[in-house]
Length: 629
Image 1 (cartoon, rainbow, N blue to C red):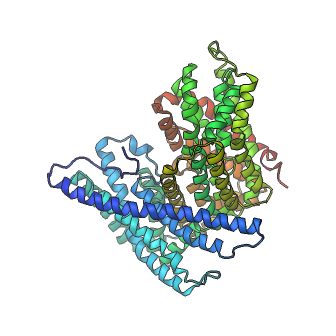
Image 2: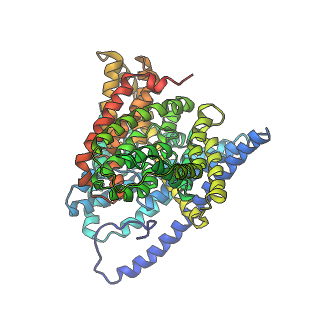
Image 3: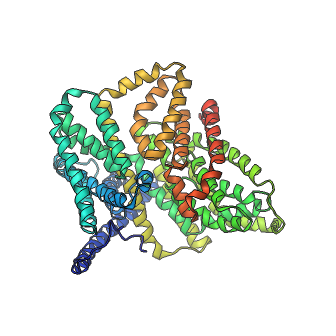
């Protein structure tokens, strides 16, 4: 099956003329998708070149290119919106499917159509405000390039229109007209009811926050609507039905959230992770660790933990991290008698364990929405990961204490040395990236471009593994994943702004500050809350939505912001990878090709270790802040 092909919705069609109509539609859609993917891939490549040129000019020739960052920012919004359109066509926007997956196939098919229709509804509602916003930007001129800012802002309505077109193609492809009628009828009824109740909402005050930001969001997410569009519908409904603010304000907040300069590193780190995998650098790292530890009981499990620690965070996708490690290790682990369920359980646990390890995109997102220093977050994230890794190793030691190693040969010293020499350029890269940011030598965005250049040279000259044919698919995937992440950040920024403008943030700060027990109680409540949020919203949406609200409260009750960030990230990681709702757990099962049921029993021992580790990190601030200046 072509992974780039749009997913089918619904059943089959009996009309013999339908295949011919669909064939024409499919060709039109494929042509449009090809143009969008080519443009998005080109934008990623241009971003890399422009930013790397800026780095070389600044550090190599001491002559900064004053226009490079501005051009990169203009192109970035276009990249985000075209990437979001690619993700929409490929059905790669983050959504919660655990509840929908438990329903009968008939209801599931209707909800699939409903999810597409809900997304289309938001896109139709927001297209005109986006056009107004872009037209208003004609009056603003960029300082370095001296062009109208509308050239940048136009990316918003264009991306929205493309997503709308792809959603129409998906609805036309629905096989069952009955499913389409039920889903669209339900959606139209819901929109009409909310619109008619507009006069009723206005006098309710902050009760509307519960109706829209809890009720609408929860209903949309549980129904399988992509998270970004669930957020978008909630904030659009709140602004349109309970305030008199122009809706272009929402578009402006989306633009602000998606265009933060720190977030320029998101697509670059995603591409860097793919490059490390393509050039064989990840495989070289794992091979060295296997030669070093493979002969001890549970050795390959230790390699899995250490390998995830080394590569984690660089790709920007936990699924990509796991996919780089699991195929290398799982065959040998199975050969040694490891049960498939235990393999995916440990893989999931390592995914949660490594959430704080830089250059994690969650760390970068926290820095962008809360103002916490990226360098401080990078410094603070390493030791919490080691604490959790040690506890996971303790569980592995107990589970594999009777492993049969009679058929396992210990690698000779020269074999280990050879593997180390081969892996050294690959092992050095993660440490160079982290050191450069931590020591303030370069920003996260700058160091990501340096890492790309380093990986490309290493792949071409040292590892001799560089498949030029994979470059365009890698660039396209980078655009799609980045667009999906950034659209969530955009709509969540709109929701966070709405919560702040309503006065809810002040009320929440007062209530949380007055909790009995002070900082300890606030930390405990945060851990529980973010475990739940991590299972429902995943890390980045939860951080963007609640970070601006809770981090100031943490500071007010005396908790160091880096310490709080580490505890929050670890808590979200547990929620993300804990069954039955954790999306990350099912990703691990898909990568390992294991039935999720098989991992349910063994995973709880690892999850208990992660919970204990999070409690230790929460109770001992030095683990997160001990290496800060």
